[in-house]
Image 1: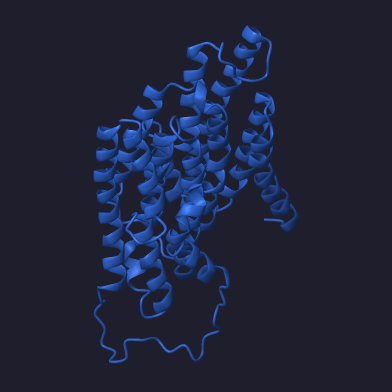
Image 2: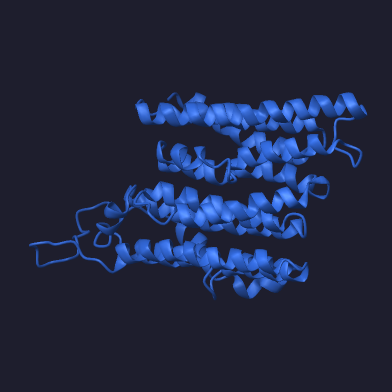
Amino acid sequence: MNPITLIIIYFTILMGPAITMSSSNLLLMWVGLEMSLLAIIPLLANKKSPRSTEAATKYFLTQATASMIILLVIILNYKQSGMWTLQQQTNNMLLNMMLISLAMKLGLAPFHYWLPEVTQGIPLHIGLILLTWQKIAPLSILYQFYQLLSPTITTILAISSVFVGAWGGLNQTQTRKIMAYSSIAHMGWMTAILPYNPNLTLLNLTIYILLTVPMFITLMTNSATTINTLSLAWNKTPMILTMASIILLSLGGLPPLTGFLPKWTIISELLKNNCSTLSTLMAIMALLSLFFYTRLIYSMSLTMFPTNNNSKMISHHHQNPKHNFILPTLTVLSTLTLPLSSQLIT
């Protein structure tokens, strides 16, 4: 693709959520969502294969449907109240339609079917954008209007997402699909706490992005799209696989790593609001998620492929080393920031 075209596309992807986050006008928020949607389509379809075309088509149809519902809500709300923002007086049906359309955009269950398929059909670096940056705009809208949303529907979306994210990732061998189901589960955790303490949703989103970015960088370094290719990488990049193992444990929410912080704070907050059944179910599903992350770690670091060569490590003398400065920093941030929890929560 032409470099100038790429710069314009990435700039539009960057500006879309920024416009959505900074505006209180519903129409401008919708424009921001559309900018990020239309700009990412060429990136999804850039690889000339049927799989990427299918992924781009699925993504476009799902997101366009959600955008159409959002636009319908905006117009009906303006007709009813004469304002470009949602109010306490807004019809409950409109609020529920807005919530469901944003759930479609985020890939919350039961509107999650497109997410693993689309992530599987695109390159790893585009998958990273899809699972991190593209989530910011819909979540910022939910954050602005959290008081108006129905807690019942929000909780149903959250618990079903946590269940689907945990069960769906169990039998996967493709790393991109595993990361997609991980994203569904994390979005469920963020949605569960939204009616009670939206600031914890933002904290969870920040930590989720901090964990997902280094994980995708390790996958991109080894071009690992399946568990098998990941298990062959230990004798090429042993240090990177060690980092990946720790990041995966943090994604699973194992103390004393950073990933434990959002789960700990969310369960505490839910218990304060008498949601003991919800928090118990979510904690059990977190164990299932931890199981498939541990299975990834097992295949990466504890299995050896059969070889006739006595020397297990590949010689690095004749290879140009790739210097990756961002990965060590992100690994430290994604594993060792739990002691800062008192500063982050207040």
